[in-house]
Image (tube, rainbow, N blue to C red; front, top):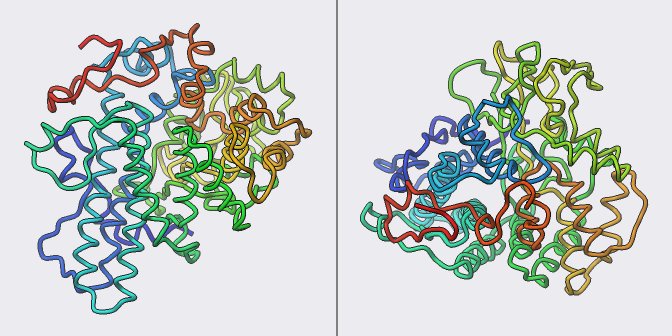
Length: 491
């Protein structure tokens, strides 16, 4: 069922921002004339914040390019000349501060933070105006959702750029233009504080018609992942353990099914970005272009093709095959010249040998009269399998065990993929993370945070001291001169 988040569609669909100084007003709804005493309006600004998470055409292209193409598991895809000057730079580590896709990611995640800031400001007004404690409590609950959204935005900004400014309220253009970058420690604290406050007010679940709204377990899962990057092993394990102890989540028996349309918001899902065409073939709809950007290029019929970017590399295919990891291969690798179990042909004439199987959407779901591949596909951000692997990794790094052993957590993920149990060493856990989460925009950041990037990616162009973070865009430094030059880049 497609979701309550779309109830306020005309309010929630957002314009894209053209520069950093726009973030105060973009991704928000008008406030003039708002009656803060009406409880039925409480969720509107949160709906707008959720809507800001979806990826439009340009955002989706920038996202898959920046988050995955620098890794060894993915290649640019499409054709050799297509987007060579932007995505091609990311694939070869030849990018600089002028790369427009990197700038789009800066703008996108500040847009999301802006939408969350606006929601928090609106919800404070509603809470003050509510006449019953139940309605005031609901305002605080909605504020918890906005805090998770904001924490997600800053976690990505931190991973991408390192030290960045914190915008936690509406600011004037002058304030934004002189807002200094904060240290990584300050940003981690800001994210932790948001998630801690969210955990205090979020519910354990929502009704089926509200599927996709962020719960207390979403906040715990995101905090666990953030702690992993911070190397706060105790917090990473304890936050994951809370989810494990709840026994409210489980692994879907068949790995390939995790990514099916039928299993959106399934018992393995802790954080998904919702998408739906609402059955429309034109006009505004809360669709997401994430899967479409990765669909097989030049395939037929038209509803079974996309742009063909961010494709599995031969390196990934060979590595999975050497592991005997057939279940992961079947789910992750969509091969040209084959027919899917659902009966869709991927033509041998498609320009790439492989496409991302995890975003494959059968033609029966792509009902548009033009290229509608994957428009209804929900982005899986955090799955229960990742929580189990995070727990195991934290324990392997010295955290105390909780409800289950690291060995059992780690090998339950392997067992679902049809693999025999092995010792839960850190090396094995990291290999399992690579296999389980392949093509889900984690590999590059995992290599950086574990200190393996130079060894693994050096042959692709990665330079230590330069490529651990992406450069703060030149366009943003022109708008805010207090932003520093990123080490290793020429401005």
